Length: 231
Figure 1 (cartoon, one colour):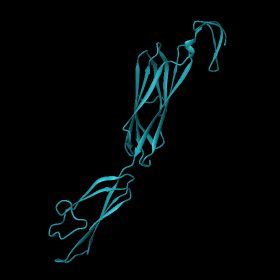
Figure 2 (spheres, helix red, strand yellow):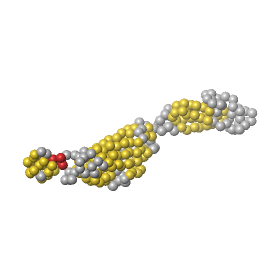
Figure 3 (spheres, helix red, strand yellow):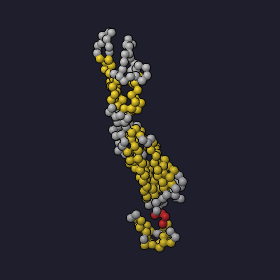
């Protein structure tokens, strides 16, 4: 600083701020970041892979002056893909031009991303937004916000059924084996198998024993890659 300053005001001389030179007269508050807040809400959290993740960005001007040329750059997490947004990006898929924000005004940006099915169960998605704004004299300032979202895996129940012997003679015994497998990467809860027996057959026995009637089997919880047999 090489200037004449009194009561927060530079009357004459030169002030260097953020590597830039400003000639007085100038109020010193013009060299400080504005009271601009930027927050982000993720929904849902946690989010299942293969589904959409929604971000809502809120930018509020709590200052006593207009924030000029406000822009937001959103760095999307790895493992996601852009679906849509409101407003649409100004450039690319993640650069939003908000324009001027008046005193007391809040601007909202809504973004929808797809969480890819290749993301592992338990992955934490880190999303960072960088906002820039200008005071009336043209100095730019930056604010940053980071949001974390946990990814849930998805259970995938498959069944395979075999009949022995095949063909089977009339009056003989037919044995069915059902292989129930969770090939997903998340626990499958309250797994139940309902077996509709063909007409012309009479139930004899099963292992495990049916939990309802003779054809409903409550298997409970299957861990990832776990298989259960019903005979």
